Image (cartoon, rainbow, N blue to C red; front, side):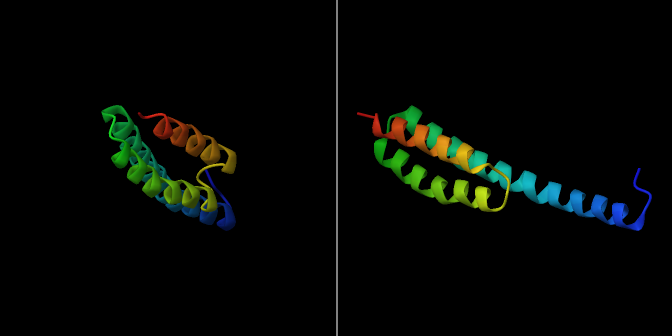
Length: 87
């Protein structure tokens, strides 16, 4: 348990950030799931649209420190390759 005033404050800040970060991570997952569903349905237009909306959301996660840059880039690359492969 935190004892000093500084460590108590850090614990409070960490609790607040955890809520914000988990919400942001959940939001990113939702956007990625929409792309996955569009790919699974085989609708290229919907998949492209979903990918376009997911891309800035992923990058926002990077700038906010929720995701690593390479992780977001890898996800974008793999998703875009799958969208492109839809006949």
